[in-house]
Amino acid sequence: MKKLFLLAGIALMSLNVNAQEKEDKGLEGAWFATSQFGYTQTKSGDVKSTNITVLPIVGTFITPSVAVGAGVGMMNIKAEDGTGTLANSSLIVVEPLVRKYWNVAGNLYFFGQIATPIISGKEKEADTKITQFGVAASGGFDFFVTKNFSVEFSYNLANFSSTTIDPKVGEKTTITDFSLAHVANVESTYNGVLGGSNPTLTTPLSFGFKFVF
Image (cartoon, rainbow, N blue to C red):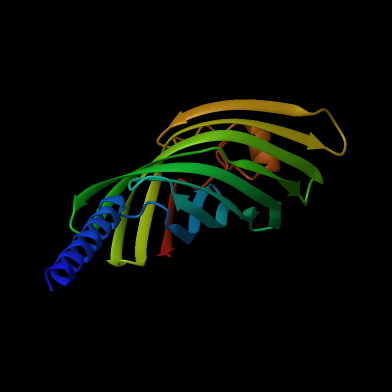
């Protein structure tokens, strides 16, 4: 009988240790899937410019508070006035990223993110190839509605980008830009090809829904 009690005690201790280890690990090893949506609209005179981004992201937590992932999505930049479409760019976005989370209170978390977006595609009206490499630092909030579902918002804080514009007719142009808090720094080349879009093509504000499994 004493042996049975001893074995039962060892088993309970083992279960308690395993449960504690699992609790300590938190989200470590968990996978997540989210899709970020970004929208920007600006108006200068009669020209209205819109930037729409849809970026599905998949990643995993390598520690309880650090996650790595990558997104592959699309971006559309269009400029219009009373006469019609001035610029219309269809672009593909590939974005590796790393995030660090801090608990604010309860189910609310703040995260800092470093991403290296690679953007490429074509502006249809001018038949121009566009390629951009960049580094973007952003901050955001992640609210867990349940342990497996959250809503997140993020805003770009600093951006560095190098963009190459290669028209079918004319010379290739490369523009390097650095901006804080996505401050606009529009150049004439962008006015003609990208309809007045910021040199950093990613939208400053984005939101999404995240599933953890």
